[in-house]
Length: 278
Image 1 (spheres, rainbow, N blue to C red):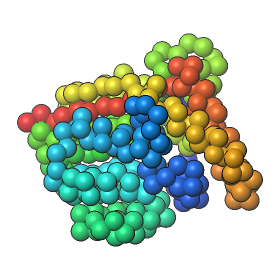
Image 2 (cartoon, rainbow, N blue to C red):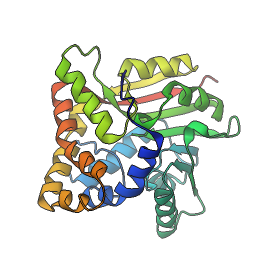
Image 3 (tube, rainbow, N blue to C red):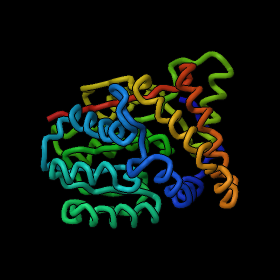
Image 4 (spheres, rainbow, N blue to C red):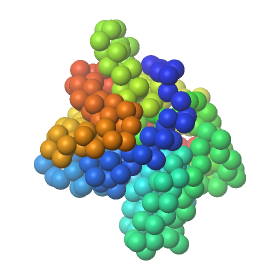
């Protein structure tokens, strides 16, 4: 695991309060990578990532889902609309919580979704409440990643699954420039640390889960940052960001960094599904 001690909780919350609109303009309602199969649009690729993770997690319909780091509610709303799942999303950003709630109403799934402004590292839920604990690109922002999986095991019913997509540090990095790339991504994207694929497997198994799927999707997702970088340049988003704050400018400037990190192997993109024993 590679850490960035400079990242603070208040910076993560502030980033998403300020930058959610940039995400929406640059990318769309899903605040996560696209998963490409061919030359489909970015929107289709984003939905495909959600649907592929749901397939691997064995979500067939009607499950109770905890969406950790729900963002603007993209995954929760999609699963509620398509599979009639009952989704409860948590985000540290009050702006995102309001957006997700309004979006759920717009899509007609307010009765199946609920969004809270809550730090999941401080959250308390009833034991055996959920069928699935779902998190797409949120664990990067957690300060105590192993604790999430310990808590998730308690929150899940027997046989429940944890389904994770995460940015990862490459395994056993030796080159100083690769390690620096990961640290630059952590600083620019407000990640206290990035674990490796092996770290995630160990954390889940130590929490009592049995691994079902461990997949490397790096080659199928990195196009995300090529598209975002090109849109920043085309629409001169950096000039707008300079009027807001310097941290947002740094965030935009790190798009090339994360793209290079994927291409050099300094970073990977992983998918993990594990089951709580029955």
